[in-house]
Length: 134
Ligand code: IDP
Ligand code: MG
Image 1 (cartoon, rainbow, N blue to C red):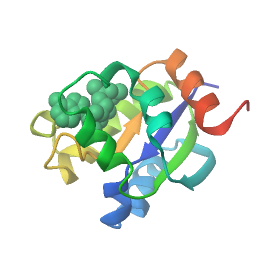
Image 2 (image 1 turned 60 degrees about the vertical axis):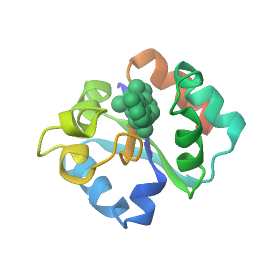
Image 3 (image 1 turned 135 degrees about the vertical axis):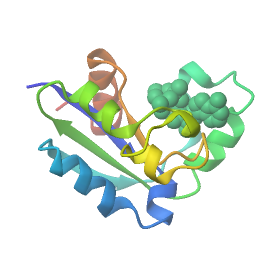
Image 4 (image 1 turned 90 degrees about the vertical axis):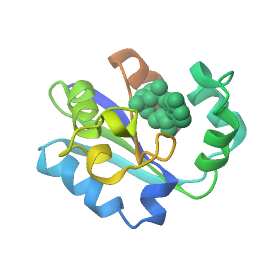
């Protein structure tokens, strides 16, 4: 069965939206097979966001992602990588359509509530990074 790595960001925690977002994942009939809360550090973020470290917004992203705990999950289901991306909505909040998590709750492109792996290959790398070999 396909699986993906999902991470609820510190704004989801701060805004008390953890339950709401997990409910949307479960109502879609995806299965959460592991879950934990953790605090990220600069080294973990530099690996997770390696494709963005040279962007002008990276220091703001880093600060935001260390501003509180994240909720890390392994989520399983058929075509779950794309399925979670569809539930999330577009990265840029103005492009995220209503009915998606970002479309309904985000009004900022950095503080956009949720991470989901963008490919099956990256899902396995991210699960290994945050949960170890499983
Ligand atoms: P994704 O989260 O939709 O996969 P990525 O391009 O992988 O989008 O970017 C990772 C995270 O970096 C985004 O979720 C967002 O928090 C932040 N980010 C991406 N692009 C921008 C931008 O143009 N301005 C500000 N923050 C951004
Ligand atoms: Mg991404």
